[in-house]
Image (cartoon, each protein chain N blue to C red):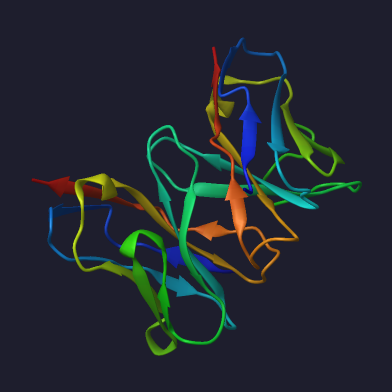
Length: 113
Length: 117
């Protein structure tokens, strides 16, 4: 069975500082990997996805993530965070493109002025 | 484009009653929809996969007789929580895939908060 681990429950970052959110997955083959953001009162929004090709993927809102097969990781990064980035971030994996997602427990991002 | 709505956004019901939650794809036809459950400050857990015109596929541990899923059309899937109990209180979220859209993307609804008293 596939699983996702997000080791950081909370992360606090100063506005303008860089950000890295960690995600490790467990899956036998090459997985389909996703990062979603959830803001209060809003549905989950896809930031980026990886399923093949270039292991460094660019997403919306200035986010990027790098797939590292050797480390079973798919960490999310942003060079400079904005106060509006405060939200819950979920890493997810699927065995196939049409499968339901297995989510990590999420990382709550706090931006301090 | 690719908007998914849910109705109601929140509902309170008494223990023992049933409640129906609707998930609609507003501007595309969704052959596959998914239902997730999210406990407070926790992750989303996949409950079932719903395919239009066929029976839903439930994840292990999800009671199919308690959580009835119907995907009667290409734009509507419903989740009925039967004989609800306080432990069914949760945030229920649906998602849909758009066959005509970017590959491997699911579009999520805003969720429905269910409180059983």
